[in-house]
Image 1 (cartoon, rainbow, N blue to C red):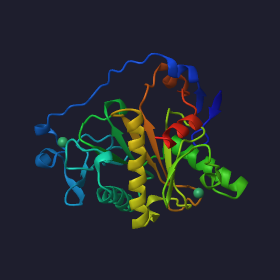
Image 2 (cartoon, protein in one colour):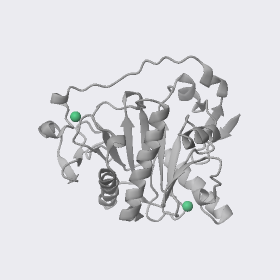
Image 3 (cartoon, rainbow, N blue to C red):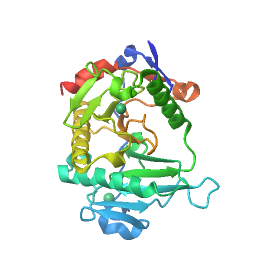
Length: 298
Ligand SMILES: [Zn+2]
Ligand SMILES: [Zn+2]
């Protein structure tokens, strides 16, 4: 079965036989000696400039020492690292609710700060957890990239959401029937496996209310977002021990009424290979309804 992803236009082939193929259990694990880890609080002299600090220095945003883009480039941009814990060995699933609240709040506040930079057309916040997800440091951290070019993927997404809203007079996310793809919910947020997921066990988290941008979440909602994020990561980690994953935040611009803020969690089980790179198509070996059912029951 082939589906086209509504938000990105990318094709995904659901090939359930692929799941049965033998997989090697060997995992690449990053190890940075703790005495030279630039993200440990004791080594802050090894890291770049501090831009933002909160929660008793547990959370810090610093310049990226090796930025993808710099202010001097012909393609203007910003690149920061958000270190979300002092502790070298801690991870989101170990954080208290209060710690999670300050983490999500710091992301919101940083979006607000970057929104004053008129040269930036798009800001991407993401987390690479583990080497298989693209991390180069073991110590838990996120990255924030401000771009002066709107990526094609985001252009497509904005157009798809706009077109849907025009045709249906309702937001795409607010119209979906989540019953079969439902994973978990709390007062303000809903977690589900999108019916056109490109990746095995992909989970999206959306606000139940139509909210376009993280900057519009109040403190109670920020807290509930942290709680549901941790809950989903615990569920995924119970399924795959010590899972590598990516977390990506998708925000609308202030003027984009049809956008619905969401968080995408991509478990990195199975690698992207020549097929994906050459065709731009994806292979998913678990039906999203089956993934949702399994995650609901964990
Ligand atoms: Zn460290
Ligand atoms: Zn909506």
